[in-house]
Length: 130
Image 1: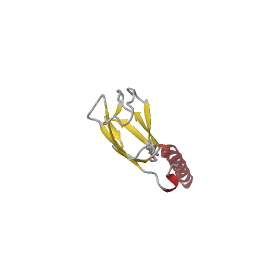
Image 2 (image 1 turned 180 degrees about the horizontal axis):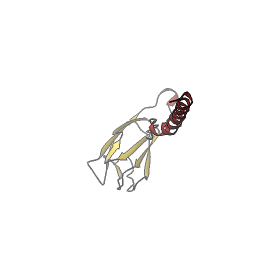
Image 3 (image 1 turned 180 degrees about the vertical axis):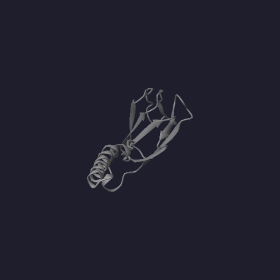
Image 4 (image 1 turned 135 degrees about the horizontal axis):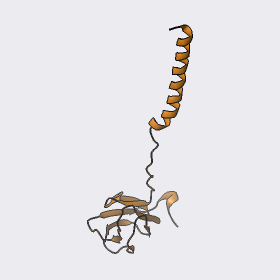
């Protein structure tokens, strides 16, 4: 092979390598996390579970349950400490503001094996309500 052919082949190989790397890089780069971050005052209903199963909040916090399952679920307090939700279809939400400290056990009234707990703590310092 002559020097010109070798140089031409090297140039083409380098150009192809650069082009391939640039076009393939978006495919092979690790994807950024696509998961939604859990909101501090939120409970997600997925795969017949409450996530998180236990949530700790301060007095005066509004907690929102969102149904991510393909079937309806309903939220009810084990001791009627808060109002029962309507049935929640996919992506429907139910919210309740916890005004008193305590441990609130709840369940899905459609699927009673699904249970969760909200632990409401007294607000202190700059979080305290008058």
